[in-house]
Figure 1 (tube, rainbow, N blue to C red):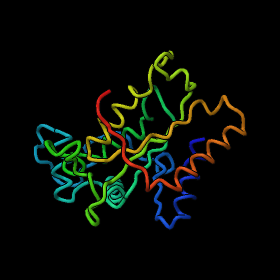
Figure 2: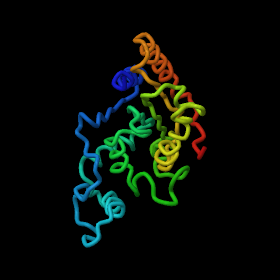
Figure 3: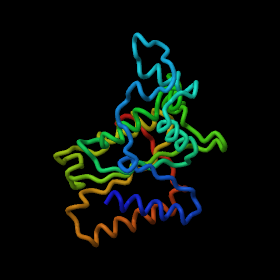
Figure 4: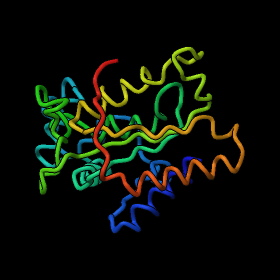
Length: 216
């Protein structure tokens, strides 16, 4: 289902004339772990390795490894970044979390106090337009399970660390999430309806206003 949602987004946005770039992390065999090998040059302090400090300085000096630099370029050029994933343990899969850890580093995406509304990714440098982020994900549980009275609790609490603590922290303006509840437990016709609804939303995505992304 995630593949179908991704394909729908690529098709609809491409038909609009958008330039669409997909980072299929599994196909890329993207390395999820943040390690010394992410820095290609000399370390600032080889006796005491601090990943945050070293990657910040490597970004400034152009000494980040190729896969990180390539993903950062994609983010810099994007008007809208859609994160498409299946929900794993109330969060995103480890490979996507690793992408965030390695790509949205200090100096590139944030540099306190340049965070949240002042985050370094708050706008496209060329047009001064807001840079948008949208979480599109599937769940194993039903919509009722993720309600205030449901066993899993209100989905807004799950969304807060993802949208506010990660995306908004880096300056993204956040669009309403696209949540596909329990697709494996519905009919094929219902899954087709979900894809049709997603396509219709994407046709008007540039008219959407960002949501207020603050603690619940």
